[in-house]
Amino acid sequence: MAEWLSLAEAIAAHVRDGDTVAMEGFTHLIPFAAGHEIIRQKRRNLALIRMTPDLIYDQLIGAGCARKLTFSWGGNPGVGSLHRFRDAVEHDWPAPLELEERSHSDLANAYVAGASNLPFAVLRGYSGSDLPRVNERIRSVTCPFTGEVLAATPAVRPDVTVIHAQKADEKGNVLLWGVLGVQKEAVLAAQRAIVTVEERVRTLDAPPNACVLPSWTVTAVCEVPRGATPSYAHGYYERDNAFYRAWDGISRERERFRAWTEEHIVHTRDFNEYLRVQNDPGIQVAYR
Image (cartoon, rainbow, N blue to C red; front, side):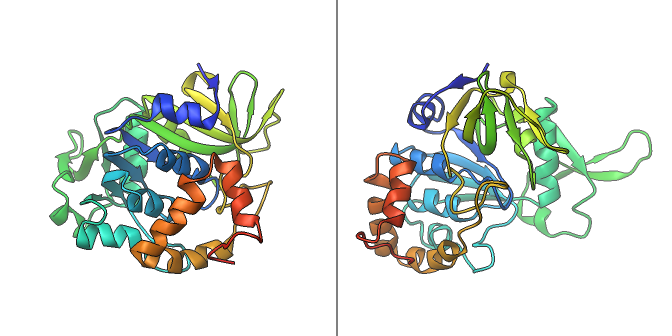
């Protein structure tokens, strides 16, 4: 059953060195606050999973938290490359990074398989693809009914999944809506799940097509307003496009990235202080 904790308490209790960690959210509801707390607590040797690793995984990789990345696309959306990701792959800085590349449809199905307690996912998506040449875990099975040869890939079963959502009630039932990716499946596939939310409410009023995660699927819930910044939270705030553009310069050089991380993440107490630092005109903010 879900337990209400501070974000620092939740990360300390449920994200351990060496864990396989999935942090999902598609275009919005990306759990930046939780990612920053993982950096702040200096977690190491994490096997990270995300369908579309963007800035938050660039930060985690550059901060030395990751040993492996399983993904299906990586980049700074609308801007370009992830420079800390590239530096780790090309130059082993700050540490070597093992890669496991899969397709979008593969990872989506693999989360479903994990949530269904199945050992692997089956799909047609790799017909004509070169990915099986570089990923030996993409294999094939023959349908016992039709004889069709299909792709098979391992289920995704994280030690811990972290997502951001709009609301949770007193019991820890979680409500999210808008563009939904694989957050539900990623939570159901995991041994433990941490959910940060915009607000804690007495009762949930679910709009049409919303997703409700019952409290028994969640380990810890944390109230973290604006916890998806600089991505957006549908119904709460917009995407900070200026930060995405500026990240290209912040992350391009190691020392500039390191200085930004120290000032804005390591030396801030929590995400609320991070937001104050970002918006304080008296402090040099690299992207404004």
